Length: 495
Ligand SMILES: *[C@@H]1O[C@H](CO)[C@@H](O)[C@H](O)[C@H]1NC(C)=O
Ligand SMILES: *[C@@H]1O[C@H](CO)[C@@H](O)[C@H](O)[C@H]1NC(C)=O
Ligand SMILES: *[C@@H]1O[C@H](CO)[C@@H](O)[C@H](O)[C@H]1NC(C)=O
Ligand SMILES: *[C@@H]1O[C@H](CO)[C@@H](O)[C@H](O)[C@H]1NC(C)=O
Ligand SMILES: *[C@@H]1O[C@H](CO)[C@@H](O)[C@H](O)[C@H]1NC(C)=O
Image (cartoon, rainbow, N blue to C red; front, top):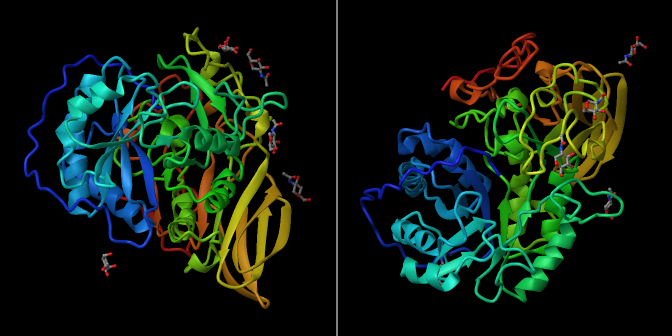
Protein backbone atom coordinates (compact mmCIF):
# COMPACT_ATOMS: atom_id res chain seq x y z
CA UNK A 1 0.00 0.00 0.00
CA UNK A 2 0.99 3.55 -0.40
CA UNK A 3 3.34 4.65 2.30
CA UNK A 4 2.75 8.02 3.79
CA UNK A 5 3.34 9.83 6.95
CA UNK A 6 0.60 9.19 9.41
CA UNK A 7 -1.36 12.26 10.13
CA UNK A 8 -3.22 12.60 13.37
CA UNK A 9 -5.28 15.49 12.17
CA UNK A 10 -8.81 15.52 13.48
CA UNK A 11 -11.27 14.53 10.81
CA UNK A 12 -13.33 17.45 9.77
CA UNK A 13 -16.92 16.57 9.12
CA UNK A 14 -17.47 17.77 5.63
CA UNK A 15 -20.59 19.58 4.58
CA UNK A 16 -21.92 17.22 2.00
CA UNK A 17 -24.60 18.92 0.04
CA UNK A 18 -27.23 17.60 -2.34
CA UNK A 19 -28.01 14.26 -0.78
CA UNK A 20 -30.20 12.52 -3.29
CA UNK A 21 -31.50 9.01 -2.89
CA UNK A 22 -31.01 6.78 -5.86
CA UNK A 23 -32.85 3.61 -6.81
CA UNK A 24 -31.39 0.78 -4.79
CA UNK A 25 -30.17 -1.40 -7.64
CA UNK A 26 -26.80 -0.59 -9.16
CA UNK A 27 -27.64 -1.21 -12.76
CA UNK A 28 -30.20 -2.85 -14.93
CA UNK A 29 -27.70 -5.01 -16.73
CA UNK A 30 -28.25 -8.69 -17.31
CA UNK A 31 -25.18 -9.52 -15.23
CA UNK A 32 -24.66 -8.91 -11.53
CA UNK A 33 -20.90 -9.03 -12.01
CA UNK A 34 -19.03 -5.83 -11.17
CA UNK A 35 -15.51 -4.58 -11.74
CA UNK A 36 -13.85 -2.29 -9.21
CA UNK A 37 -10.55 -0.47 -9.34
CA UNK A 38 -8.50 0.48 -6.27
CA UNK A 39 -7.88 4.24 -6.12
CA UNK A 40 -5.46 5.88 -3.66
CA UNK A 41 -6.94 9.05 -2.16
CA UNK A 42 -3.63 9.33 -0.23
CA UNK A 43 -1.86 10.80 -3.27
CA UNK A 44 -4.60 13.08 -4.62
CA UNK A 45 -4.53 15.79 -1.95
CA UNK A 46 -3.59 18.31 -4.65
CA UNK A 47 -6.98 18.14 -6.39
CA UNK A 48 -9.06 21.28 -6.09
CA UNK A 49 -12.37 20.56 -7.73
CA UNK A 50 -14.59 17.69 -8.75
CA UNK A 51 -13.51 18.23 -12.35
CA UNK A 52 -10.00 17.11 -11.33
CA UNK A 53 -11.55 13.63 -10.97
CA UNK A 54 -13.53 13.70 -14.21
CA UNK A 55 -10.86 12.25 -16.49
CA UNK A 56 -10.29 9.25 -14.20
CA UNK A 57 -14.04 8.65 -13.88
CA UNK A 58 -14.63 8.87 -17.64
CA UNK A 59 -11.71 6.62 -18.56
CA UNK A 60 -12.65 4.02 -15.98
CA UNK A 61 -16.28 4.00 -17.05
CA UNK A 62 -15.33 3.70 -20.73
CA UNK A 63 -13.25 0.68 -19.80
CA UNK A 64 -16.16 -1.07 -18.10
CA UNK A 65 -15.11 -0.36 -14.50
CA UNK A 66 -18.25 0.02 -12.37
CA UNK A 67 -16.79 1.64 -9.28
CA UNK A 68 -13.61 3.00 -7.77
CA UNK A 69 -12.66 1.58 -4.37
CA UNK A 70 -11.51 4.79 -2.69
CA UNK A 71 -8.63 3.84 -0.40
CA UNK A 72 -8.59 6.16 2.60
CA UNK A 73 -6.40 6.73 5.62
CA UNK A 74 -6.94 9.38 8.25
CA UNK A 75 -5.27 12.37 6.61
CA UNK A 76 -6.69 15.85 7.17
CA UNK A 77 -7.55 16.18 3.46
CA UNK A 78 -9.44 12.89 3.16
CA UNK A 79 -12.96 14.25 3.51
CA UNK A 80 -12.36 17.15 1.14
CA UNK A 81 -11.07 14.73 -1.52
CA UNK A 82 -13.84 12.19 -0.94
CA UNK A 83 -16.42 14.92 -1.44
CA UNK A 84 -14.84 15.84 -4.79
CA UNK A 85 -14.57 12.20 -5.89
CA UNK A 86 -18.21 11.42 -5.00
CA UNK A 87 -19.30 14.58 -6.80
CA UNK A 88 -17.33 13.78 -9.95
CA UNK A 89 -18.55 10.18 -9.95
CA UNK A 90 -22.15 11.40 -9.78
CA UNK A 91 -21.58 13.75 -12.74
CA UNK A 92 -20.01 10.95 -14.76
CA UNK A 93 -22.47 8.16 -14.00
CA UNK A 94 -19.81 6.26 -12.05
CA UNK A 95 -20.01 4.66 -8.62
CA UNK A 96 -17.52 4.80 -5.76
CA UNK A 97 -17.19 3.21 -2.33
CA UNK A 98 -14.96 3.55 0.72
CA UNK A 99 -12.04 1.19 1.22
CA UNK A 100 -10.63 1.66 4.72
CA UNK A 101 -6.86 1.27 4.86
CA UNK A 102 -5.95 -0.41 8.14
CA UNK A 103 -2.35 0.76 7.83
CA UNK A 104 -3.89 3.98 9.17
CA UNK A 105 -7.21 2.99 10.72
CA UNK A 106 -7.03 0.72 13.76
CA UNK A 107 -9.20 -2.34 14.17
CA UNK A 108 -10.39 -0.90 17.49
CA UNK A 109 -12.00 2.01 15.63
CA UNK A 110 -15.20 0.31 14.50
CA UNK A 111 -17.24 3.34 15.56
CA UNK A 112 -15.15 5.73 13.45
CA UNK A 113 -15.37 3.36 10.47
CA UNK A 114 -19.15 3.11 10.87
CA UNK A 115 -19.64 6.86 11.12
CA UNK A 116 -17.49 7.45 8.04
CA UNK A 117 -19.68 4.97 6.14
CA UNK A 118 -22.77 6.83 7.37
CA UNK A 119 -21.32 10.15 6.23
CA UNK A 120 -21.20 9.02 2.57
CA UNK A 121 -23.89 6.33 2.44
CA UNK A 122 -26.64 8.45 0.91
CA UNK A 123 -24.62 10.27 -1.73
CA UNK A 124 -25.82 9.50 -5.24
CA UNK A 125 -22.50 8.01 -6.40
CA UNK A 126 -22.28 5.53 -3.51
CA UNK A 127 -22.15 1.96 -4.83
CA UNK A 128 -24.96 -0.19 -3.50
CA UNK A 129 -25.02 -3.94 -3.97
CA UNK A 130 -28.13 -5.96 -3.25
CA UNK A 131 -29.61 -2.73 -1.89
CA UNK A 132 -26.81 -2.24 0.66
CA UNK A 133 -24.03 0.33 0.97
CA UNK A 134 -20.90 -1.38 -0.38
CA UNK A 135 -17.75 -0.99 1.76
CA UNK A 136 -14.31 -2.61 1.58
CA UNK A 137 -10.86 -2.37 3.14
CA UNK A 138 -7.17 -3.10 3.02
CA UNK A 139 -6.54 -5.49 5.97
CA UNK A 140 -8.72 -4.96 9.09
CA UNK A 141 -9.10 -8.49 10.51
CA UNK A 142 -10.52 -8.14 14.00
CA UNK A 143 -12.75 -5.13 13.39
CA UNK A 144 -15.86 -5.25 15.60
CA UNK A 145 -18.45 -5.80 12.88
CA UNK A 146 -21.50 -5.28 15.06
CA UNK A 147 -20.15 -1.95 16.33
CA UNK A 148 -19.28 -0.85 12.77
CA UNK A 149 -22.77 -1.76 11.49
CA UNK A 150 -24.43 -0.05 14.40
CA UNK A 151 -22.48 3.19 13.87
CA UNK A 152 -23.20 3.08 10.12
CA UNK A 153 -26.93 2.99 10.84
CA UNK A 154 -27.69 1.58 7.40
CA UNK A 155 -27.48 -1.78 5.67
CA UNK A 156 -23.82 -2.34 4.78
CA UNK A 157 -22.52 -4.85 2.22
CA UNK A 158 -19.13 -5.33 3.88
CA UNK A 159 -16.50 -6.99 1.67
CA UNK A 160 -13.23 -6.25 3.46
CA UNK A 161 -9.75 -7.59 2.83
CA UNK A 162 -10.00 -9.97 5.78
CA UNK A 163 -7.71 -12.99 5.63
CA UNK A 164 -8.85 -16.63 5.77
CA UNK A 165 -8.04 -18.02 9.20
CA UNK A 166 -7.72 -14.54 10.71
CA UNK A 167 -10.86 -12.47 10.07
CA UNK A 168 -14.47 -13.25 10.99
CA UNK A 169 -15.83 -14.59 7.69
CA UNK A 170 -19.22 -15.33 9.26
CA UNK A 171 -19.92 -11.66 9.89
CA UNK A 172 -19.03 -10.28 6.47
CA UNK A 173 -20.92 -10.21 3.18
CA UNK A 174 -17.96 -10.88 0.88
CA UNK A 175 -14.19 -10.49 0.91
CA UNK A 176 -11.40 -8.94 -1.14
CA UNK A 177 -8.16 -10.86 -1.64
CA UNK A 178 -5.31 -8.36 -2.03
CA UNK A 179 -2.65 -10.89 -3.08
CA UNK A 180 -2.80 -10.51 -6.84
CA UNK A 181 0.79 -11.76 -7.18
CA UNK A 182 2.49 -15.09 -6.64
CA UNK A 183 4.24 -14.91 -3.27
CA UNK A 184 5.99 -16.86 -0.51
CA UNK A 185 3.12 -16.61 1.98
CA UNK A 186 5.03 -13.82 3.74
CA UNK A 187 4.57 -10.84 1.39
CA UNK A 188 7.65 -11.47 -0.75
CA UNK A 189 8.38 -13.26 -4.02
CA UNK A 190 7.86 -17.05 -3.98
CA UNK A 191 10.66 -19.53 -3.59
CA UNK A 192 10.57 -23.15 -4.72
CA UNK A 193 9.82 -24.23 -1.14
CA UNK A 194 7.34 -21.41 -0.32
CA UNK A 195 5.20 -20.84 -3.37
CA UNK A 196 1.67 -19.45 -3.04
CA UNK A 197 0.08 -18.79 -6.43
CA UNK A 198 -2.73 -16.31 -7.04
CA UNK A 199 -4.98 -19.30 -7.77
CA UNK A 200 -4.09 -20.75 -4.33
CA UNK A 201 -5.35 -17.44 -2.88
CA UNK A 202 -8.58 -17.69 -4.90
CA UNK A 203 -9.18 -21.14 -3.46
CA UNK A 204 -8.41 -20.14 0.14
CA UNK A 205 -10.84 -17.20 -0.12
CA UNK A 206 -13.60 -19.16 -1.82
CA UNK A 207 -13.29 -21.89 0.82
CA UNK A 208 -13.44 -19.35 3.66
CA UNK A 209 -16.36 -17.51 2.03
CA UNK A 210 -18.44 -20.65 1.66
CA UNK A 211 -20.43 -19.28 -1.26
CA UNK A 212 -20.46 -15.60 -0.28
CA UNK A 213 -19.27 -13.22 -3.02
CA UNK A 214 -15.54 -13.09 -3.70
CA UNK A 215 -13.75 -9.93 -4.85
CA UNK A 216 -10.97 -11.43 -6.97
CA UNK A 217 -7.85 -9.32 -7.46
CA UNK A 218 -6.33 -8.56 -10.88
CA UNK A 219 -2.98 -6.83 -11.11
CA UNK A 220 -0.24 -6.47 -13.70
CA UNK A 221 2.89 -5.87 -11.69
CA UNK A 222 4.56 -5.21 -8.36
CA UNK A 223 7.80 -3.28 -7.87
CA UNK A 224 8.62 -0.80 -5.13
CA UNK A 225 11.99 0.85 -4.49
CA UNK A 226 12.01 3.39 -1.67
CA UNK A 227 15.40 3.99 -0.04
CA UNK A 228 16.59 6.12 2.85
CA UNK A 229 15.28 9.30 1.15
CA UNK A 230 11.86 8.55 2.70
CA UNK A 231 10.86 7.10 6.09
CA UNK A 232 8.93 4.19 4.47
CA UNK A 233 11.90 2.43 2.86
CA UNK A 234 10.91 -0.79 1.02
CA UNK A 235 12.37 -2.58 -1.95
CA UNK A 236 10.97 -5.73 -3.55
CA UNK A 237 9.16 -7.23 -6.55
CA UNK A 238 6.61 -9.97 -6.99
CA UNK A 239 6.86 -12.09 -10.15
CA UNK A 240 4.99 -10.09 -12.79
CA UNK A 241 6.05 -10.64 -16.44
CA UNK A 242 2.85 -11.82 -18.26
CA UNK A 243 0.69 -11.61 -15.14
CA UNK A 244 -1.73 -9.01 -16.51
CA UNK A 245 -2.65 -11.35 -19.39
CA UNK A 246 -2.55 -14.64 -17.47
CA UNK A 247 -4.66 -13.27 -14.62
CA UNK A 248 -7.43 -12.02 -16.90
CA UNK A 249 -7.59 -15.43 -18.56
CA UNK A 250 -7.82 -16.97 -15.08
CA UNK A 251 -10.57 -14.54 -14.06
CA UNK A 252 -12.66 -15.57 -17.07
CA UNK A 253 -12.40 -19.19 -15.94
CA UNK A 254 -13.08 -18.38 -12.30
CA UNK A 255 -16.02 -16.03 -12.99
CA UNK A 256 -16.19 -14.46 -9.51
CA UNK A 257 -19.05 -12.13 -8.57
CA UNK A 258 -16.62 -9.18 -8.34
CA UNK A 259 -13.17 -8.27 -9.66
CA UNK A 260 -10.94 -5.55 -8.23
CA UNK A 261 -8.15 -4.18 -10.38
CA UNK A 262 -5.11 -3.37 -8.25
CA UNK A 263 -4.70 -0.44 -8.91
CA UNK A 264 -5.60 2.76 -10.74
CA UNK A 265 -2.94 5.02 -9.25
CA UNK A 266 -0.62 3.32 -6.78
CA UNK A 267 2.48 4.45 -8.61
CA UNK A 268 4.72 3.56 -5.65
CA UNK A 269 4.06 -0.16 -6.15
CA UNK A 270 4.07 0.04 -9.98
CA UNK A 271 0.63 -1.57 -10.37
CA UNK A 272 -1.19 1.49 -11.75
CA UNK A 273 -3.23 1.25 -14.94
CA UNK A 274 -4.37 4.89 -14.81
CA UNK A 275 -2.48 7.59 -16.66
CA UNK A 276 0.71 9.20 -15.33
CA UNK A 277 -1.04 12.52 -16.00
CA UNK A 278 -3.83 11.74 -13.50
CA UNK A 279 -3.26 14.56 -10.96
CA UNK A 280 -1.32 13.35 -7.93
CA UNK A 281 1.44 14.25 -5.53
CA UNK A 282 4.80 12.50 -5.39
CA UNK A 283 5.77 10.24 -2.49
CA UNK A 284 9.13 9.56 -4.15
CA UNK A 285 7.83 7.00 -6.67
CA UNK A 286 8.53 9.30 -9.64
CA UNK A 287 12.10 7.90 -9.74
CA UNK A 288 10.74 4.68 -11.27
CA UNK A 289 7.43 5.95 -12.66
CA UNK A 290 8.62 8.79 -14.86
CA UNK A 291 8.50 7.77 -18.56
CA UNK A 292 6.74 4.50 -17.66
CA UNK A 293 3.14 4.84 -18.86
CA UNK A 294 0.89 1.81 -18.25
CA UNK A 295 -2.23 2.89 -20.10
CA UNK A 296 -1.70 0.10 -22.65
CA UNK A 297 -2.75 -2.24 -19.82
CA UNK A 298 -5.91 -0.26 -19.40
CA UNK A 299 -6.68 -0.77 -23.10
CA UNK A 300 -5.77 -4.45 -22.91
CA UNK A 301 -8.25 -5.14 -20.13
CA UNK A 302 -11.27 -3.68 -21.97
CA UNK A 303 -12.32 -6.81 -23.90
CA UNK A 304 -11.52 -9.01 -20.88
CA UNK A 305 -13.82 -6.91 -18.69
CA UNK A 306 -16.59 -7.23 -21.28
CA UNK A 307 -16.12 -11.01 -21.51
CA UNK A 308 -16.06 -11.34 -17.70
CA UNK A 309 -19.31 -9.41 -17.34
CA UNK A 310 -20.96 -11.51 -20.01
CA UNK A 311 -19.87 -14.68 -18.17
CA UNK A 312 -17.89 -15.76 -21.23
CA UNK A 313 -14.79 -17.92 -20.76
CA UNK A 314 -13.25 -16.57 -23.95
CA UNK A 315 -12.34 -12.96 -24.65
CA UNK A 316 -12.21 -13.47 -28.41
CA UNK A 317 -15.54 -12.09 -29.52
CA UNK A 318 -15.20 -8.98 -27.32
CA UNK A 319 -12.17 -7.75 -29.26
CA UNK A 320 -13.51 -4.90 -31.38
CA UNK A 321 -10.29 -3.04 -32.19
CA UNK A 322 -7.04 -4.74 -33.17
CA UNK A 323 -4.09 -3.86 -30.95
CA UNK A 324 -0.67 -5.02 -29.91
CA UNK A 325 0.01 -4.23 -26.27
CA UNK A 326 3.64 -4.68 -25.18
CA UNK A 327 5.72 -4.18 -22.09
CA UNK A 328 9.21 -4.65 -20.75
CA UNK A 329 11.59 -3.42 -18.07
CA UNK A 330 13.95 -0.71 -19.37
CA UNK A 331 17.16 -2.54 -18.39
CA UNK A 332 18.35 -6.15 -18.05
CA UNK A 333 18.00 -7.47 -14.52
CA UNK A 334 21.68 -8.14 -13.93
CA UNK A 335 23.02 -4.61 -14.42
CA UNK A 336 24.85 -3.33 -11.36
CA UNK A 337 23.60 0.03 -10.04
CA UNK A 338 24.97 -0.34 -6.53
CA UNK A 339 27.32 2.64 -6.81
CA UNK A 340 24.43 5.08 -7.48
CA UNK A 341 21.24 3.39 -6.27
CA UNK A 342 19.10 5.10 -3.61
CA UNK A 343 18.73 1.94 -1.52
CA UNK A 344 22.51 1.77 -0.98
CA UNK A 345 22.64 4.97 1.04
CA UNK A 346 22.00 5.78 4.69
CA UNK A 347 20.64 3.42 7.32
CA UNK A 348 16.91 3.15 6.69
CA UNK A 349 14.61 1.79 9.35
CA UNK A 350 13.71 -1.80 8.48
CA UNK A 351 11.04 -2.32 11.11
CA UNK A 352 8.69 -3.40 8.33
CA UNK A 353 11.12 -6.09 7.12
CA UNK A 354 10.45 -4.74 3.62
CA UNK A 355 13.75 -2.97 3.05
CA UNK A 356 16.57 -4.52 1.05
CA UNK A 357 19.68 -2.97 -0.40
CA UNK A 358 20.50 -3.06 -4.09
CA UNK A 359 18.42 -5.00 -6.60
CA UNK A 360 14.87 -5.38 -5.35
CA UNK A 361 14.27 -8.52 -3.30
CA UNK A 362 12.76 -11.10 -5.65
CA UNK A 363 14.50 -9.68 -8.76
CA UNK A 364 15.44 -13.16 -9.95
CA UNK A 365 11.72 -13.89 -10.48
CA UNK A 366 11.57 -11.50 -13.46
CA UNK A 367 12.51 -12.62 -16.99
CA UNK A 368 14.63 -10.46 -19.28
CA UNK A 369 11.98 -10.45 -21.99
CA UNK A 370 9.60 -8.36 -24.04
CA UNK A 371 5.96 -9.33 -23.52
CA UNK A 372 3.39 -8.82 -26.26
CA UNK A 373 -0.35 -9.39 -26.24
CA UNK A 374 -2.07 -9.45 -29.61
CA UNK A 375 -5.78 -8.61 -29.68
CA UNK A 376 -6.87 -9.57 -33.18
CA UNK A 377 -10.14 -9.89 -35.06
CA UNK A 378 -8.54 -12.28 -37.56
CA UNK A 379 -5.29 -14.21 -37.61
CA UNK A 380 -2.03 -12.50 -38.51
CA UNK A 381 1.73 -12.47 -38.05
CA UNK A 382 3.17 -10.59 -35.10
CA UNK A 383 6.75 -9.47 -35.56
CA UNK A 384 8.78 -8.34 -32.56
CA UNK A 385 12.26 -6.86 -32.78
CA UNK A 386 14.04 -6.36 -29.47
CA UNK A 387 17.44 -4.90 -30.21
CA UNK A 388 19.11 -7.58 -32.31
CA UNK A 389 16.48 -10.24 -31.68
CA UNK A 390 13.65 -10.55 -34.18
CA UNK A 391 10.93 -13.16 -33.87
CA UNK A 392 7.71 -13.80 -35.78
CA UNK A 393 4.64 -15.46 -34.36
CA UNK A 394 1.49 -16.71 -36.04
CA UNK A 395 -1.29 -15.24 -33.92
CA UNK A 396 -4.84 -16.53 -34.10
CA UNK A 397 -7.94 -14.39 -34.06
CA UNK A 398 -8.61 -13.42 -30.43
CA UNK A 399 -6.10 -12.77 -27.67
CA UNK A 400 -2.68 -14.35 -27.49
CA UNK A 401 0.57 -13.60 -25.69
CA UNK A 402 4.20 -13.93 -26.73
CA UNK A 403 7.59 -13.15 -25.32
CA UNK A 404 10.95 -12.45 -26.91
CA UNK A 405 14.34 -12.33 -25.16
CA UNK A 406 15.29 -8.79 -24.22
CA UNK A 407 17.76 -7.08 -26.55
CA UNK A 408 19.42 -3.71 -26.05
CA UNK A 409 18.35 -0.79 -28.24
CA UNK A 410 15.12 -0.15 -30.13
CA UNK A 411 11.96 -2.17 -29.61
CA UNK A 412 9.73 -2.65 -32.67
CA UNK A 413 6.34 -4.26 -33.11
CA UNK A 414 4.39 -5.05 -36.25
CA UNK A 415 1.33 -6.92 -37.45
CA UNK A 416 1.24 -8.27 -40.99
CA UNK A 417 -1.48 -10.23 -42.72
CA UNK A 418 -1.29 -11.89 -46.11
CA UNK A 419 2.09 -10.20 -46.66
CA UNK A 420 0.64 -6.74 -46.04
CA UNK A 421 1.68 -4.41 -43.21
CA UNK A 422 -1.39 -3.81 -41.07
CA UNK A 423 0.25 -1.77 -38.32
CA UNK A 424 3.59 -1.23 -36.65
CA UNK A 425 5.52 1.09 -34.42
CA UNK A 426 8.85 1.64 -32.70
CA UNK A 427 8.56 2.07 -28.96
CA UNK A 428 9.48 5.45 -27.51
CA UNK A 429 11.57 3.62 -24.89
CA UNK A 430 14.86 1.92 -25.72
CA UNK A 431 16.34 -0.80 -23.53
CA UNK A 432 19.69 0.25 -22.09
CA UNK A 433 22.35 -1.41 -19.94
CA UNK A 434 22.92 1.69 -17.84
CA UNK A 435 21.20 2.67 -14.59
CA UNK A 436 18.44 5.14 -15.48
CA UNK A 437 18.58 8.01 -12.97
CA UNK A 438 21.16 5.84 -11.19
CA UNK A 439 18.64 3.36 -9.79
CA UNK A 440 17.43 -0.21 -10.22
CA UNK A 441 14.20 0.36 -12.13
CA UNK A 442 12.07 -2.81 -12.38
CA UNK A 443 8.89 -0.96 -13.45
CA UNK A 444 7.78 -1.81 -17.01
CA UNK A 445 7.22 0.51 -19.92
CA UNK A 446 3.84 -0.36 -21.48
CA UNK A 447 3.18 0.61 -25.07
CA UNK A 448 0.49 0.01 -27.62
CA UNK A 449 0.19 -0.30 -31.39
CA UNK A 450 -1.39 1.73 -32.88
CA UNK A 451 0.20 4.33 -30.62
CA UNK A 452 -1.91 6.67 -28.56
CA UNK A 453 -1.82 10.20 -29.89
CA UNK A 454 -0.65 11.79 -26.64
CA UNK A 455 2.46 10.94 -24.71
CA UNK A 456 1.38 10.28 -21.14
CA UNK A 457 3.57 12.18 -18.70
CA UNK A 458 3.85 12.96 -15.02
CA UNK A 459 2.81 16.51 -14.21
CA UNK A 460 4.95 18.81 -11.99
CA UNK A 461 3.29 17.75 -8.71
CA UNK A 462 3.92 14.12 -9.62
CA UNK A 463 7.63 14.86 -10.09
CA UNK A 464 8.17 16.87 -6.91
CA UNK A 465 10.48 14.32 -5.24
CA UNK A 466 12.20 13.04 -8.39
CA UNK A 467 15.72 14.09 -7.52
CA UNK A 468 15.58 13.65 -3.76
CA UNK A 469 18.23 11.06 -2.86
CA UNK A 470 19.44 10.60 -6.46
CA UNK A 471 23.17 10.60 -7.06
CA UNK A 472 23.07 10.46 -10.88
CA UNK A 473 21.63 12.82 -13.52
CA UNK A 474 17.95 12.23 -14.25
CA UNK A 475 16.63 13.79 -17.47
CA UNK A 476 12.91 14.44 -17.02
CA UNK A 477 10.00 13.41 -19.26
CA UNK A 478 12.22 12.19 -22.07
CA UNK A 479 9.70 10.07 -24.03
CA UNK A 480 9.53 11.27 -27.60
CA UNK A 481 11.81 14.19 -26.80
CA UNK A 482 15.06 12.93 -28.30
CA UNK A 483 13.82 11.69 -31.64
CA UNK A 484 10.66 13.38 -32.83
CA UNK A 485 9.19 11.14 -35.47
CA UNK A 486 7.66 12.55 -38.61
CA UNK A 487 5.45 9.55 -39.12
CA UNK A 488 3.35 10.11 -36.03
CA UNK A 489 1.47 13.17 -34.93
CA UNK A 490 2.05 12.68 -31.24
CA UNK A 491 2.30 15.72 -29.09
CA UNK A 492 3.17 16.23 -25.51
CA UNK A 493 0.22 16.10 -23.23
CA UNK A 494 -0.46 19.51 -21.82
CA UNK A 495 -3.05 19.76 -19.12
C1 LIG B 1 -34.49 -3.41 -16.76
O1 LIG B 1 -35.02 -4.41 -15.91
C2 LIG B 1 -36.41 -4.59 -16.03
C3 LIG B 1 -36.86 -5.57 -14.95
O2 LIG B 1 -36.07 -6.73 -14.94
C4 LIG B 1 -36.74 -5.07 -17.45
O3 LIG B 1 -38.12 -5.24 -17.60
C5 LIG B 1 -36.25 -4.03 -18.45
O4 LIG B 1 -36.44 -4.48 -19.76
C6 LIG B 1 -34.76 -3.74 -18.23
N1 LIG B 1 -34.35 -2.62 -19.06
C7 LIG B 1 -33.25 -2.65 -19.79
C8 LIG B 1 -32.93 -1.40 -20.55
O5 LIG B 1 -32.52 -3.61 -19.84
C1 LIG C 1 5.45 -21.47 -8.23
O1 LIG C 1 4.45 -22.31 -8.79
C2 LIG C 1 4.04 -21.94 -10.10
C3 LIG C 1 2.87 -22.82 -10.50
O2 LIG C 1 3.18 -24.14 -10.32
C4 LIG C 1 5.21 -22.04 -11.04
O3 LIG C 1 4.85 -21.64 -12.33
C5 LIG C 1 6.35 -21.15 -10.53
O4 LIG C 1 7.48 -21.31 -11.33
C6 LIG C 1 6.69 -21.50 -9.09
N1 LIG C 1 7.65 -20.52 -8.59
C7 LIG C 1 8.77 -20.89 -7.97
C8 LIG C 1 9.66 -19.78 -7.51
O5 LIG C 1 9.08 -22.04 -7.76
C1 LIG D 1 24.75 -4.53 -3.99
O1 LIG D 1 24.89 -4.35 -2.61
C2 LIG D 1 24.15 -5.28 -1.83
C3 LIG D 1 24.23 -4.85 -0.37
O2 LIG D 1 25.57 -4.73 0.00
C4 LIG D 1 24.71 -6.66 -2.06
O3 LIG D 1 23.95 -7.60 -1.32
C5 LIG D 1 24.60 -7.00 -3.54
O4 LIG D 1 25.21 -8.22 -3.80
C6 LIG D 1 25.25 -5.91 -4.39
N1 LIG D 1 24.90 -6.15 -5.77
C7 LIG D 1 25.80 -6.22 -6.72
C8 LIG D 1 25.27 -6.40 -8.11
O5 LIG D 1 27.01 -6.11 -6.52
C1 LIG E 1 15.06 -6.18 6.43
O1 LIG E 1 14.34 -7.15 7.14
C2 LIG E 1 14.08 -8.35 6.38
C3 LIG E 1 13.18 -9.23 7.22
O2 LIG E 1 13.73 -9.46 8.44
C4 LIG E 1 15.39 -9.01 6.05
O3 LIG E 1 15.18 -10.19 5.30
C5 LIG E 1 16.25 -8.04 5.27
O4 LIG E 1 17.51 -8.59 4.99
C6 LIG E 1 16.42 -6.74 6.04
N1 LIG E 1 17.11 -5.78 5.20
C7 LIG E 1 18.33 -5.32 5.47
C8 LIG E 1 18.89 -4.32 4.51
O5 LIG E 1 18.97 -5.71 6.42
C1 LIG F 1 23.81 -6.27 -32.57
O1 LIG F 1 24.37 -6.73 -33.78
C2 LIG F 1 25.44 -5.92 -34.24
C3 LIG F 1 25.87 -6.44 -35.62
O2 LIG F 1 26.03 -7.83 -35.59
C4 LIG F 1 26.59 -5.96 -33.25
O3 LIG F 1 27.64 -5.13 -33.69
C5 LIG F 1 26.09 -5.47 -31.92
O4 LIG F 1 27.09 -5.60 -30.96
C6 LIG F 1 24.86 -6.24 -31.50
N1 LIG F 1 24.32 -5.60 -30.34
C7 LIG F 1 23.98 -6.24 -29.27
C8 LIG F 1 23.44 -5.40 -28.16
O5 LIG F 1 24.06 -7.44 -29.17
